[in-house]
Image (cartoon, rainbow, N blue to C red):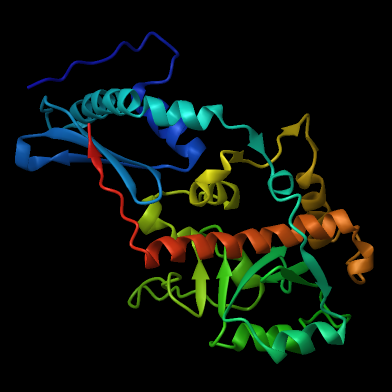
Length: 323
């Protein structure tokens, strides 16, 4: 029974840390460890580097069922995974890092003002079956801005002077015939700031956001991309569901406490929700660039949903490989 311990004198990350944090967390890959009782205590790790892709690695040695055995077993199977996934890791590392606005700069989105009566007249004349929804400034209710994407159009709504959402937006949120798709973190802040309740009844269990009328792509992606404890975020979900783009989408870095690029716009919405800046009087308070930044989040949320459903409907299940 093997239980070889690694040296604790080095500051280098352990193989387990390298696999979990340096690789899987960075790329949004699922990484699940399991001790196999049926084989006397071997360790297995399953990594999902893409849609319906599973790479499973299992140690030959067995390990005692204690903390030391767990540490050693995970370390050894992590080494196997790092070696077996070397090609996939190298490919991801080779991709240029870009922002959503760079990747989709050529998309001719139609930005529609919710205050314009023609916007909702057009919407309800032939309502879509599914929309992508995002918000900015979701610490307050209603939020600072609501974005609703359908087709190549995005409705942008600032709260009315009385602090309420428009009647048409409320109608949309109540309409169970239209699927509302979110990319929310596990706190469901976007949903809650729009008045969409989340089930906290322990007897009934959590709300299932993988079926209409309210769908969260963070939850929906768990089956094709594997389980993760932390939200992947929209950028990683776009990267993983649209691999043919050959890019890694990440948020811009914050340098010396100063937000750049898209973060500068996010900070503006944060200042408004914190009462440190005046509320938006309308879309005219936002530049076209700021409107596009916000609209892309909702549009990309919808596109990721469509990719997830496309692969699901086509039953694109790639055969897992064992290391």
